Length: 328
Image (tube, rainbow, N blue to C red):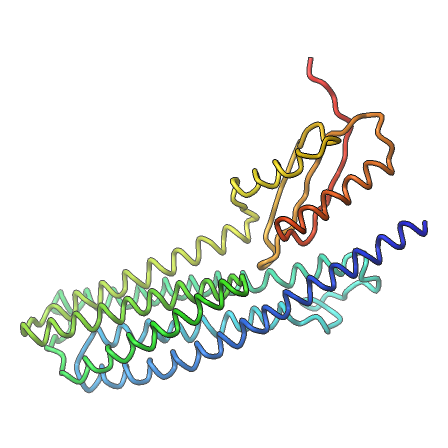
């Protein structure tokens, strides 16, 4: 009994440490996203104003694209805020258990899912904005709206947006790698797409001004919409797969090979890994010698959990041992 109590206390100590590290990473990610909000807001205002006075649909499309960046960053901030809220006494109105050693860890891991949920919503909003941008560009090409050659001042707006978005992309990419944060990784993909669309906007406006081609502005706005759509679909796909408990089979195979190195493990019968926000949990069923004592199989499970945490950063590994049966 004393050994079990000591084990529980040790497990809780390890969990608290890993939880605190993840919460610290989320806090740092919040600072990055606030920078995103400020940068996107500045760019959107400049571009939209210049698009109106300079008669450029492409610049307007880019301004709406950057407006999507503001919405994305705010949604990700909300998701991270919920994930970091460890001091409340309920989750979505449901009370937490009094004993945190029973399911408090699982509930906190559930909170980390909110970051992924809001990343998914970000992808949906980007897809919707892409539809609006492409529709507007198509209507102009069909003659439903008036087309004009953009004014030279719009070229300045596109140039400023390109430079700022490249800075934002580098900032998000560096932060995403350092913090291993899905929200910042999504933001980096979004900001890179935004930088490319701003660059495309700059080139399109420059071409329209140089060659006096009226329809080029409409075509470029459709191209911008396609860039937004591609980025939105990619973010939606990755976050929805995470929520559906999809995990890369190649990485699961690495987990399996690491567990099979233990001589006591006769076979890895089943292995399932899943994401909880940025944290990975693992459920595994192993086959062991039928004569192995319970205490030995328990210790083996603890060794496997420690190995998976140390080698792969898996936050929690549930190991179930069953008797090994030879196939005839």
